[in-house]
Figure 1 (cartoon, rainbow, N blue to C red):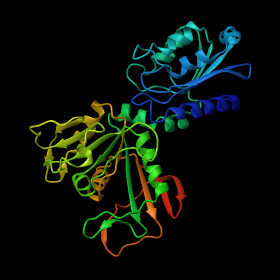
Figure 2: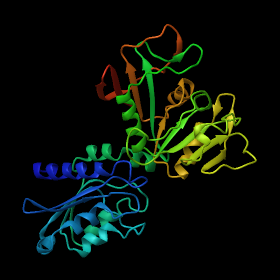
Figure 3: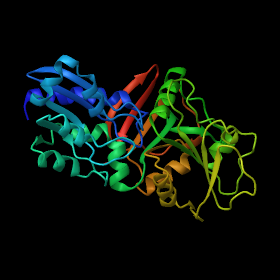
Figure 4: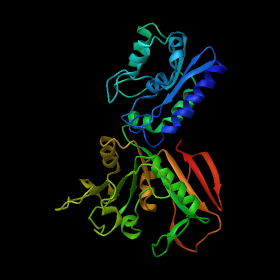
Length: 349
């Protein structure tokens, strides 16, 4: 791996990130085509169902540079696909264009690919190098890799707390902890992830919309656990404005527009979380924000079912007593201030 390889692969990562929030359940992928130290084409996967990064990179090459493809190197942040899906296989495109050198960050764990794209290229005579900035490539597509290797969504536990670690009052009422600026970041996070989950108490007591309003982007699937169907029909979650999924013990007799119900197993401790995650996996929900109350968050923590914690703390606000927030722990991967609030992102070890 050379410094040049690293430079062009990092450009692939930059391009790939432009698809964040739009490509799921596909991965984010960037591609750069280089001839004698000059980039002659580049592209990224813009949205699910659209052309892949390699296609957009090849199509971006100017007509006068097309003959140079047979002497070029293409850098791709993920193994080129080898199967027909929404689009033709990218490995075959590179073969057809006679691009002789292919440099890849990560292999693709998706069963329809899983090394077949690399083998196709090698069988066609291309020189293939893998593992260039592989860890950074995994970080880029951590949602996609977790989804396919662990057969569940990538899980982000998120909450806001006071300076002394409370989420709500002793009466069970929520506290205004976020600022307008940090709220916009919450909406940005929602736009980037596939689904957002709350428990019954949050759904009933707070009447959340769980939509993207202070940012731009797609709406996540709204998900609620409502064992006894306690959410009132007048609440936002049942307004039909955004696709919504409700896990309950017994299915309702009627139907509501844009609201689907799933009968789920419950016990004395609550819902079977593994059932929930399997159902979301089957519905291709690649990433999940858990925005529930303290008990729901703690149930995920107790079972080790999380990949990240994202904790916002209002450093100027405290309460004497109330609903205690879970104990945040893990490896700190990001920390920053938003006004008087701090946001810390932890990675599960």
